[in-house]
Length: 302
Length: 258
Image (tube, rainbow over all chains, first blue to last red; front, side, top):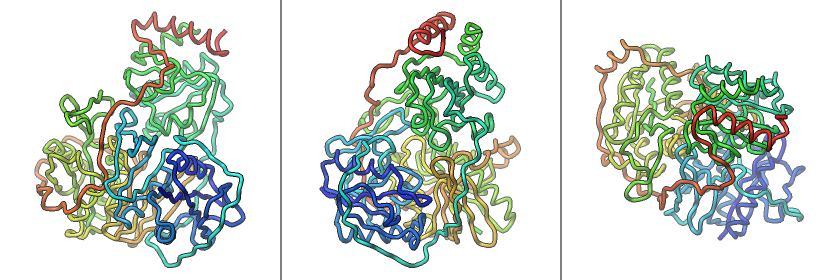
C-alpha cells in the first residue's frame, strides 16, 4: 500500500493539518510520499519523498494547475491512495483528481475499518462503511479525526512545476471580519443553535448567558439566518473556544461546530432530539424543550 | 443564457434514522422529505441571476429520484425556475457520486448550459463531490463553497469560504459550475401566487436509464449509528426537576457556580 499525501499551504504558511495526513498514512500502515505547493523555505517535518512546487509560480489556489502537479506525482509514485484533508482546499481539489483518474473518491473519512472507510452521514447522526470498487482511491479525511504526526527527519525534495492557464483565476484573499466579541476569553459561553426556532427567542438564550456572567455564542445556521451577528459564531469558520462551561442550546452538533468547542471543560447540551450528535461531546444532555427549560434555569440561577 | 440548478431531496435531519432492509441506507418509510438546505441557496442564487438577466435567460431545475422529488422541484419552480427536468430513478440511493454526476453531465452536455448551480454538498450523504465531478466531466470551470456570487460581462466573480472566516476571491469564465454554501443569500419563501403559477410550468420526465452509462466506483457496505463513546449523562423528565438536577451537576462539576 502506497499513499500520496497532499499538504496544505495558505497565505505563505504550511498548514498544521498536513501532519494529520501523516497520521492517517501511519494508521493505514502505508508507505507515503507528499506533495506540497508551497515554498522550500518552509519544509514539513516529514521524512519521506516530497514533491515540491513553488506557490509563487503555481499559485496557492489554482485547482487546474495543482491537479496537473498531482497527476505528475501520481505518474511517478503510482500510489494506491491519494489523501487530502476535507477542507476548502481538499474537497475542491480531490474530485478533480478523482475525475481525471476515473477512480473512486471517499469523502470525509473519520476512521479506517479493515478494507473499508468509515464516514459520517445524515448531518453526522449516522455512519456509513464504504468500499472503493476501483483499485485506486482518492480520500479526504475529516480534520481532527487522525493523529498529528511530525517526523524528525527532513524530506527528500523533488521539484515539480507546471504551467498553463486554468479555468479559475485567483484574485486574492479577504480577511475574516473583525471580532467585536472575543469568545476565546469567556469562561462561560451559552450558544444559540437552530433549535431556538426564531430570532425573537434569542434573548432567552442571552438572558441565561447573562445570569452566568458569560457570553452569547451562535451556531452557523443562526448566524446565516441573521438572528445573531457573525462575531458570535463558534466553529470552523467562526471562533474556536474552550471555556469552563459551554451550554449548547438547540445546537445539533455539526462537525464544524464541534471542532470549535469540543475542548471546553464542561459541556451541557439542551436539545429535544436525544440522538443529536452534540450528545457525543456533551457531559450532560438535557432532553427538553428549550423555551421551557432555559427560562426556568435562568430564573432559578437568579 | 441557459442556467441549470441541480437539487436533491433529503430527509428532515431531525428524523430518527434506521437502516433499511439491505442495511446500506436509511429506511424511507416514516421520513419527511424536503429540499437539501444547500440547494435552497443554489436555487435562490440562480433565480436572482435569472431576474438580473431578465428575458435573455432561462433557468431549468433538475432533480434525480423517485416521484417524491417532484415536491422539491415544485418548490424550486415556485421560487422562480422556469422549467424542470425530473430524472426518474427509484434507486437513486444506490448510486455513487460518480454516477449521479454522470447522469447530470449527460443531460447538461445535450442542453449546453452556460452556468450550473449546485449545493456544496447534500445533508444526507455529504460527499461534496457531485458538483465538481459534473464540472470535470463537462470540462467547465468550477468554484466551490461560495458565500458570494456576482455575474457580469461573461465572468463570474465568486467568493469562496475558507477556514477561520477568511475568503478567497476567484474569477471564472463561462461555461462554469458553482457550488453554494449556507449563508450565500437568504432563500425566499415561495409566495402563494408563485406556487399557483408554478403549477403550470413544464416538468419533463426522463428515465434514468436514458442518461446513466457509468458503473459505481464506491459501494456502501453498512449504514449504522455511531458507536456511543459513553461518559455523557442523558437527563429527561419534568422541567422543574431537570433544572434542579442540572444546577446540582454544575455546582459539583464546574467552578462557575458557587
